[in-house]
Image 1 (cartoon, one colour):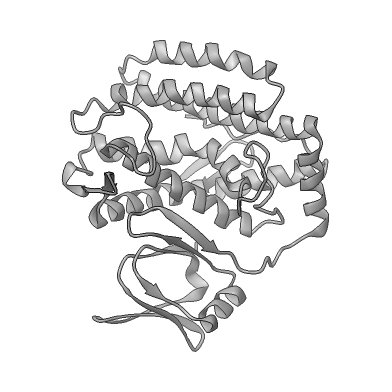
Image 2 (cartoon, rainbow, N blue to C red):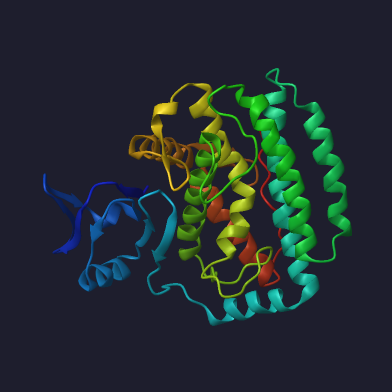
Length: 330
């Protein structure tokens, strides 16, 4: 299986014959392209056009994060699987209000079902979460009455408010409390973890979209406008609870991540380099871990699960099979 490469050091990334070379003050490190899926850059790294041409030939995406760990953007190579037919189908489903709403409802429903699976998982381990689950079930009833994506996003927002409040019950940690959802900058450690983990899921989904015929610029729940990508945001909603949030719970509950892995920056709290590396390490392990897929009858990794979800969306768009979002079985 190809690997994701994470670069935290400062240096120069360049092409060296038919491989990649990352050069720092300490020396050179070679990165074989045949084993590389994507590269995530957190350090100050110099690149040149020759490198970008080689990455395009090798179908490798670059994702950039700034000093504080915020996602900045991606070098998205020329689509090697571009399909005019699929773009037309994506646009058709976006412009048709009923078709767009149907897809948007599926993304929200998938996200809510997986949120509930996470809560049920911890409720079965003695956490008092039944009241939260009941509230979410009650709010979710209004999904069928939504007549716009804005109404759907409002429902999802209300459910996530209830869900995030439950983090304090799941974690029960004096060092990691939710208080309220805050972003850019996060105001406490738990929000810093949520923001960074979510950004990793967004980039993972974007990398998987690149290996399908889908165009990431056309989403359905999130409005397609002047933003670069939106489809990855839609699909990420389904997977954030079972990938990002589960990693956060493990890191905190097992005391792997600690208060000294954070620092005050930008009038808020962000992960320091060691904290980011810990979260990335465990997120990468989660993406490579496998589960038994009931429908196809074999084990697949969480990363492969995301790719399969995208194939299901493709089939829906071309009228082969009605899309149903993935629901975790545990």
